[in-house]
Length: 120
Image: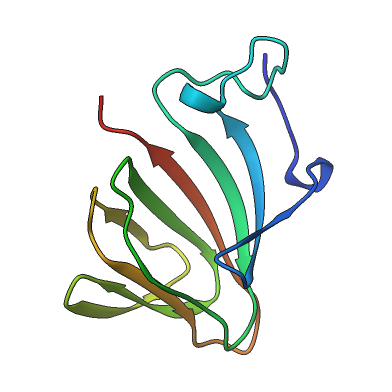
């Protein structure tokens, strides 16, 4: 069994502003000597926080898809030319090469779970 609590992970910084805890890794990041680097079909899963007023600026990925699950807070998501409000309970799919950006419009941290998978 592979079990990990996000509080046990040293955070990194995502897109210069967000706090990112990479929980599980795989594919090119896989390592048989690291129990949490175990996934074969996905790149990684992360627990992330975006502080009030901060944003991940528009960007694309040519090597993977993403799924955001919003745990707490409210924000705004742009995918290509479409902009929609997002909030806790929402799940958002972002396809390969889609331009996307996210902004925290709340007074509290915007907390989300991210899953990244390359297209095999």
